Image (cartoon, rainbow, N blue to C red):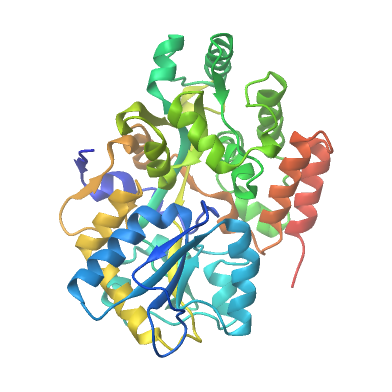
Length: 431
């Protein structure tokens, strides 16, 4: 699809304050330029990415190989739970891939802060592109003043929707919570699943809350994260309860597919792409997977998910997308560093950012931005965007607790009060 040309500062003014990224990954997949293992002096560079990186990472690796004939790579992708467990264990044991996905900022076991503190990442600070990181983004890329991760830019989170399904039901994009409920009810009566939810895939569980909380919490308390850190606020005593109750309302009114806890991310993606379902709440970085599942990429659009009945109070989440880092113990670290330096050039940043529907980290001149982001731009320029929630969480315990309690809520095994109590307990844990 053609891309709209906008000036970078239009979408970046508020996002200069963003420092982190939601844990997003996709399907198991593998391919590459070679078939022998990396992590040693010979053979191709071994790379493990998150599924949401696929469209951009493949382009970057293929282009680098085109320009460097001696370069070869072995590329595979892993779901979030395996990144957080198996890959984390490999890193600690010293047998990790040469280059791998890392989440910006803090808040998960595979986040830049957690891994760099454990001395598991290679310092990239001497590369030219690191000097272009805006001040407000540095917390996503840097720990103790050193840069450990490359990411092409900023993703937004909202509802990916099937335009043909909307047209069939005769509904328009909603701008308030009540309108959203009416749209869902109309879609349901037309035999279309209003919202596809693949909650069997753990990282998907968090997204509806992440889409609602900017409106239910941060629009009223922009300093909520600071208050949490100071101990003067809690999840249970905040608009998080409103968001979770709205999450449950969608389920109770039958607006999700049957058995969300038994439905995967891939199945939900297919449902929206084919029009069996009308919407899914997702990050823009995975839009390409939805386009691949649709007869035509033009069948799909995206809009901010309204959280309240006052349009002016709706805010959106945005954050640095999943990045790449070099294993500190890789024997091919120099080769991996050269590839990342290549990715940091403005043309490649634009190419990667466009491929994963995110706003480029920086641009020399005008940046290309996927037209799907257009409904989000006025929120970004109007100081109505907040980081993905996990980037300000103090440890790697809160996010998996959030995953688990949402699955429990959907399964009828806990209450909103019980879920938020567990999240508060996880937040207060110290190493």
